[in-house]
Amino acid sequence: KAGVTQTPRYLIKTRGQQVTLSCSPISGHRSVSWYQQTPGQGLQFLFEYFSETQRNKGNFPGRFSGRQFSNSRSEMNVSTLELGDSALYLCASSLAWTSGYGEQFFGPGTRLTVL
Amino acid sequence: EDQVTQSPEALRLQEGESSSLNCSYTVSGLRGLFWYRQDPGKGPEFLFTLYSAGEEKEKERLKATLTKKESFLHITAPKPEDSATYLCAVRGGGGNKLTFGTGTQLKVEL
Image (tube, rainbow over all chains, first blue to last red; front, side):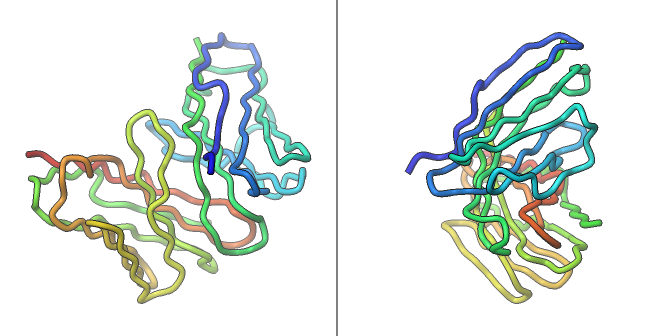
């Protein structure tokens, strides 16, 4: 069974630009969560989607947004990039949102560098 | 607000030298404590889920245990390939949001 895939794996952008990252969950998984990982803050929750609806959101500014498609694939967008947005962006998938149990499986991440 | 604290931040062991990593947590309504392993430049790899105090899970040289306030990841006779950052996370409340600790960076030397 294929794991979580994320594209692109690496991105270099300049301040003020916007970026879109993509995530394809494990086949059959319907919930997708996004996390930002930096050396200083560790893994921080961004948001999660289930059935094309945002179910939960972390403490990030509105420049960070996302969406989920009917096939469960998800994208996240960061507008007006800042130097501090440089990070590893991780996507995780799980079977369902309301199950209360079950694991999240992570993709390899997208390394975003903002110059 | 859910909180997770891991200790030590870094740990250096000799091959075969057993030890334990600690994860202390506060959460409203625990719906799972998770252990992940992360290698440099890669996404976290799932290891264990624990749901209730007293539960234990084992996989090869790793054993995870859970109490009402903390979890331990015991590493028995580690090998160099066990070198990685080990992350602890909790899920509480609604949805699938995980709150992570900052991890323990483990290095096992020959």
